[in-house]
Image (cartoon, rainbow, N blue to C red; front, side):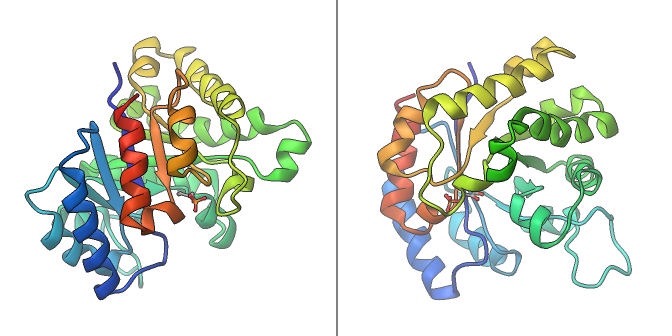
Length: 252
Ligand code: 13P
């Protein structure tokens, strides 16, 4: 049985004050939510604050990006070891916003996955197609290519150390959630693709859905066999909404 994971991706949102309030709310509500696992991925500069607020709670935290390099002359970059230094458990790699706005290629993303894994972080690998790609009928080809880049670099066994997140680009921040059937179809495809190389890794792999997940649609999405939780953007910025999604995961 795969342990569901609800991970918040705050993106470039928040301030010292708003994070204090948000995490205060999540901490006080999480007591009643016996969800298997909850995490928040914060802007790197706030990780010391997140660590201070979440230490000793069941909530894990992580970064939103990581350098492909271990250390050195890479101005502005954050190394996996630095994330670990502040208690991170997770790091998102290959989010579609990084792929689109920072021109991260599949190979770069695979190297980030490798860097996170080598340091002992759990990478959350994001894959997903644009609306154009869906309309052209190439969704499976796109997510397969994004997944295969990691398998080619690290081997299929490396997926046992990570989490996969299917985030259709057209559903991110648009309110246009994929239907549970649309999401399940891609999740099942991804799991089958991994199973083609290693059935045990595929069976254990958590595949999260991301893209306008809210308390109102989380339960029906997570009721699907291959949807093992959510990667939450907008709804992770309000304690009540985030907790609502955690409750849905709890009922899975
Ligand atoms: P929204 O939940 O705001 O659509 O964002 C999803 C996302 O990109 C999480 O990584």
